[in-house]
Image (cartoon, rainbow, N blue to C red; front, side, top):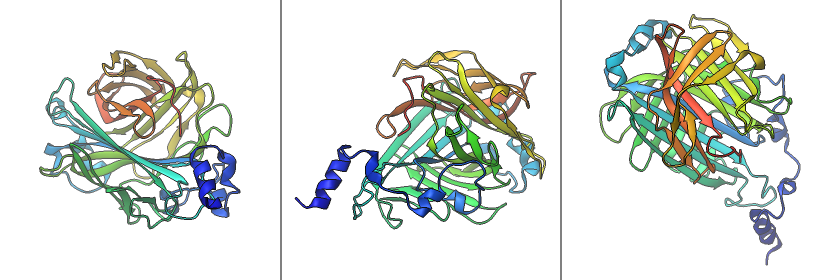
Length: 397
């Protein structure tokens, strides 16, 4: 047997281990997650191939009645984006995520089949038009290996700017702030997502200028920024007129996120109707206690500074529980989230928004369209709630 082919097969079987990866290239070394590394655009919209795990993640909602919304600044469309009780039943929520995971294998193996990275993607739609009580939640996933060839037709991730695809699913970005546009196309099994997301605010650098701690040790961190208050336009099925709404996009890359004691996390990204943006997260131990927490708040006025939350400043208190009939996992679908920016209630707009991604990432999690309420019980925003580790400890591949 050819020695190179034999080595590749050993690597694929996991017998060579991560030591087979060899020394990192200078480009990979530049991707190391470290405090003080400046975040620069458009480069950091692109892939960071030296980081172990990375994802581009967009969530949002479309409303058919929002088609006439002006295309100006956030402050000009704030009242248009506010959804009343009648409009809530017509909302459609969407979630798309493209992941890249560096395997540590085949570093010295030539050819387009060398599995240096795994690319996988998730897509989900929650349609409140079908049943105002439970909604209709559909999801799909993709998985493939990638040799790091930027021209690979089956799947690739660009380094220069955001452009990632797995087969005929893709997400890419064009243009400059404050009018850069992200486009996505994900034709799934029984639905199709076609989106155009237009930037209206500068990137929100999470944590310490984009260095976001995820645990008590410094190495448990990521580089993380958000693009809140994106103007969204598109369709979430193969036919029908385009509609518009709001979206939120996160891009994050890391070498190690989860502390050994962490089993999962809870997270929200909320677009407030006044143009503000709220992020909050907590990493949980097996007994449900908080291991680490954080988040941020940025007011909607142009030029407003963001406020990052310290680990002890964010408290999540679970409310109503929903039990999944498919996995038996019990998810809190109502929360009280206390932050330095105020205390907020988070309520899922449909209980059944669990995603079984064991065919790609190997995990089961809950990701769903939710509303944000202030202390008076008034709805002040919409966004997404994510909960992981309830159907078993989350493992980051």
